[in-house]
Length: 160
Image (cartoon, rainbow, N blue to C red; front, side, top):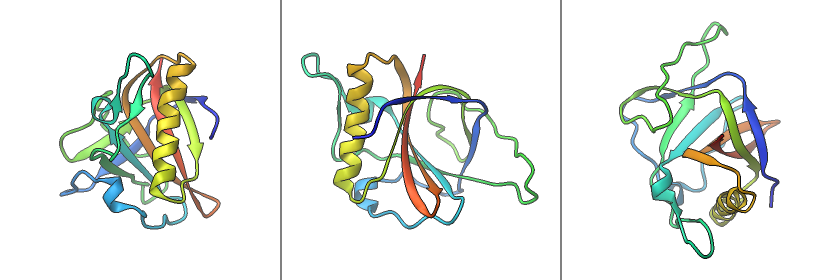
């Protein structure tokens, strides 16, 4: 299991939802295609669809996973910063831009070789936030980034 950390995101991360893109089911789409160098993808899950609350045992991940909104980072062609339209804490329902807002996040990074490893890491993240009494809110973000030629997975939830 990976360690639960706190991430201070200093500036928003910009993403675009490709025109005609549909929500994606990771259970059905696993294994995901390889990332190119520098690629960055974000999957957004509505909390009430992916986390089941249990008063006695705490929260648990819903498996199979519900559909997620999939967005991809878009670099500027000239290397300059790109402006993004903020959508706030809720998942955007229309094509266009999305910015993961700057701020504090509960954060965990891991590798998942199979879908069961992804489920386990996501469930650990949800439980660790609860066990450590980390106040979290908003969607659950799964970020997939290329680091040194390997696809690293990161889980984030807004933390107060």
